[in-house]
Image 1: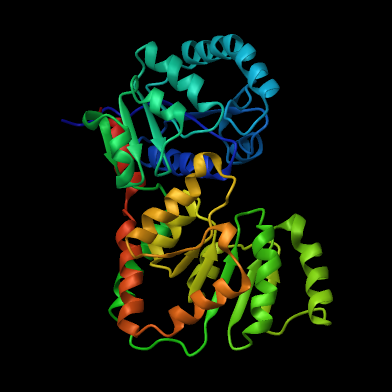
Image 2: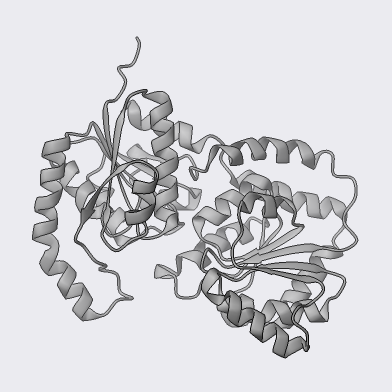
Length: 372
């Protein structure tokens, strides 16, 4: 029997790109599978979504809500709690006026309230969890939503068995295509590079610890070439630091950039990648079978970046150094260890990284959620 296309969908989430871009990937897939569908977003006033979502052509409802997690002060938490009744009323108004046929939350301040209200009003709802260990909001919401979607198999134990699916991370279509190419290229890899092209980045804003250490690593290893993404706000200060350190404006085997665009081109040109371990970066790098050293952000909520990286490290798919243990020497030791591994072992590490990636996650999530 032919399925009736959905007409109205509400997606909630924001704060960071890790919540926004997976939701946008789902939105595009919903449009492919349901021509003419009206997709709207719910976010907060303070998050990146207030700029990104309208720029993509979607209507955005903005909730006046702040954080509740333990890393903010008590005063901020109390302020958020006091505003919750008004936030719930706003959510109720959104649901009554828009009448969405599906509501899905992707995390962030605004996701919890709208998904909770939609669930108790018997709308068809779902949550998506990007990290190994879910936050408290998704744990609570899992009891009332129709579906839970997770990226890591290690996350399944935190959610109800009968309504949880592990489809992976919804990435842009070009990463699904690159995954197929990466699988094929593994069988064609017959030699390893004499030198190494090393890409280093700490997310869109960069990471100070990497900006400080990598120029020193580059000076100590002239036979490796490094590309360092500093983040826009740290670019000038990193350049000044390099000039003071080396006595020259640049280091010959170090390319310093404020941001990487398109980042996939830099991924593909690298032999080894050193970076943070947010779920989005992990999924993109896994799609390419990249050789990685993860340096988790030490202040990430619930230490989720460390738990993400640990899941891959325990599979033998990537290296892991906690920020407190990171040094010039520990980075050099990792790079030298990788360079001297036999080609077969390098290929095996890459294959384990590829095995983590679940292709067609976006398609499978939309297909499943549409049919519940």
